[in-house]
Image (tube, rainbow, N blue to C red; front, side, top):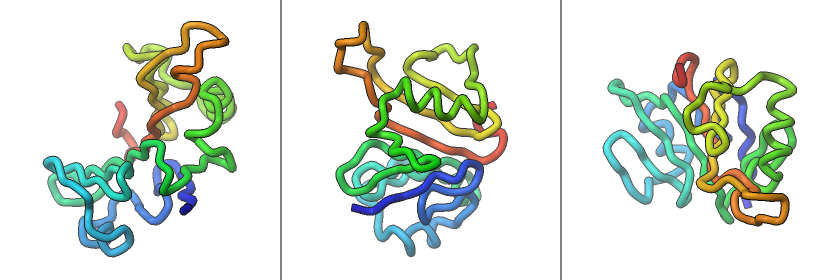
Length: 142
């Protein structure tokens, strides 16, 4: 299994913000599918291109093909509450986000964490882990 490290405002593994479409294909291979300017690689690593075909956003869903790591922590296998706590040590999340609870956006990092379900209580297994993490270029989430 590949391990891709998140470097906020920079990269997720070998994919860097600002790379050309050709450069991304060179490092990841051909995409599994394309939806407009969104290309999907490795069945869960989505790369969004801007109007100049440069990477503007990188999103990684949970996968058995790769691990996404933020400062030594596996984003998809660390409990959501712990990930929020860890990232919050560096930056506060947008407390005005209308999807707060599902979505946590850390503006100075341009980092987002997302899950489709909020656990109802401590014993609820659904929503305990984030399903997706994304980074964008500076100002992407603003």
